[in-house]
Image 1 (cartoon, rainbow, N blue to C red):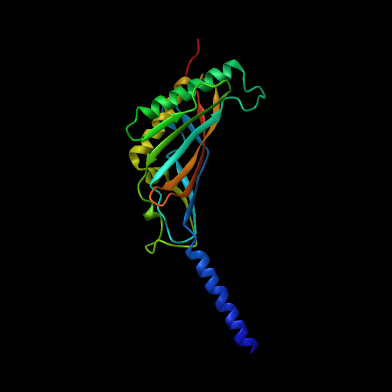
Image 2: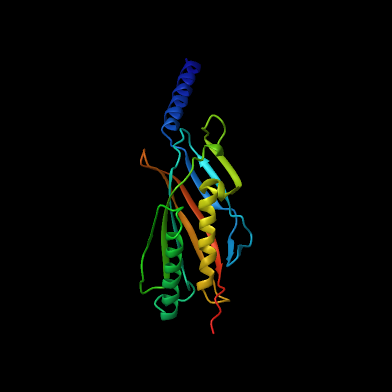
Length: 213
């Protein structure tokens, strides 16, 4: 009787696990493989690569990526309202916004606008290709980790090139010798199912190239 009871319990547990997994949407966590240094003419340790961690089963593929390019001009000081830092933050935001807006690769671009703090943020919306090639032919797994995957394969080469060009162009509006650390982070969604299925987070350091006389 004890053996039969144990088998029943195991069967129930296995069934419960299957049911729980069947409702688990595959989700992606995408983080930069490195911290990337951006100069006016190159990303020194590029091309940008990411580590992709996928968990769950029953894949729902992302088709829309919303990314935030954001940072703080001088995070060390407690004075976020320093006039010079505020002016530089607004200048960076304007430059990023104009650069992204000029690119036909992005579907929409928004910015916070001129504020009285030393933070900047621009949000970019883009349609992205399917990521099915990341997974095995069955298209489902409980855990997959892929390291050093080129970001261009996730965004598409043209969108990747536009993103890099916008970041490099920002260097020209930052005084030479100034370094600003910022993040590109965001979410990828499936529009039809209205589900968030991926998170993105990459850290960059912009090296200013503007010569101030």
